Image (cartoon, rainbow, N blue to C red):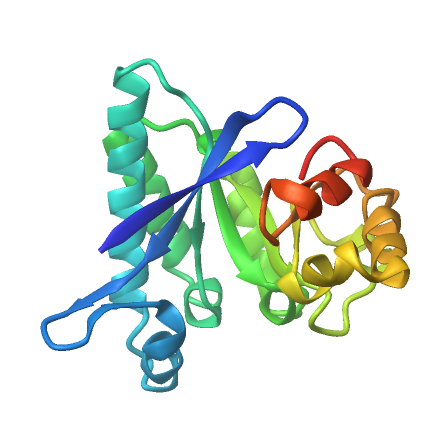
Length: 210
């Protein structure tokens, strides 16, 4: 099942995007987050079909929102199997045409490890031809540096919660977040911690678009 999480601009409170989140409605255990089932599915090579389903559902939802006058970009998480699947870009193009969604209205989120691998370069090039954006998710948990991102067509950085959560009490982490907000790349940056309250106020001081 697809859930949709808003991305809020803290300086204005305006919703600027939405992220599609997969959840498993288990008949016995209720709503399960992806951390409880996607690792096993990825190990078994079974994430291709669910990823395509989430992509299609998200584009359908975008079309519904747009028809109601609410047009914001939507992002979908994709794993390493999809990134290395030579047929996946064609699927994306087909879904965009079918749902009449412009490419720039879609962002695909990849992990730091997947997004900076050599195998992803061809995938990113084909996304660029479609106008689809690339978001590097959970940035700060791997080995990629801001300098190394200069060679990758990344449009957005999403900071890992491990960087965002401590900023209310740790000056070092606040410095890291501020520095990450000022790379040479024009990519958008997002904090993935809580929004609002004391922590939201501190994140706001790092820049206007978190």
